[in-house]
Length: 192
Image 1 (spheres, rainbow, N blue to C red):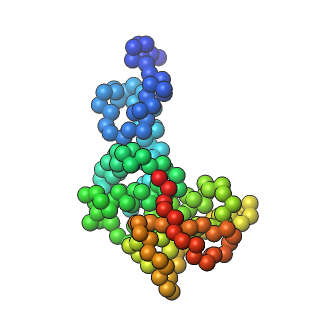
Image 2: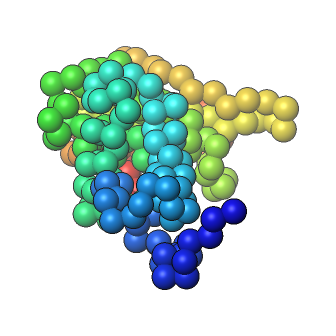
Image 3: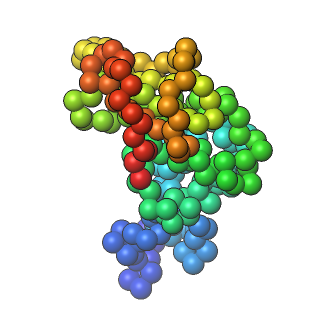
């Protein structure tokens, strides 16, 4: 077994800045353990995005990096967190990127659904549902948490009979305290 000389060995603490920076790592040899560790970290972001929204691979490059790398750079500059709103931020970035002409309502609905489903999986508040809206469409995307341990989470799209008040931003949301849509409580901004 070949071990790297001590001068070439790196621990995760030394790699931390590179683990979240998707720019090409030209200073780290591809055959090194450090490169493998960094690549594995980047793949988590790749799979979170493209496994859920594979149509993004048709918009950018086949490997997805033409979207993922510049988005991550933008997200870092915007100081975004990758909570349930991750997909909404990707969509917002796409609308101002070189790919803006390839974005359509189907992709918007998919990404809103992905964010709503992610909320349903990870939110630990007492809220039972989330309602997402976009200033670009007249539909709402709603996700409900599981009602029982053996249940499943549900995501639905509804058309509005009457328009709700303007968002003032690209996206807005509110939560439902139980498994019924409440009277409109007002829009909340997407978390950063």
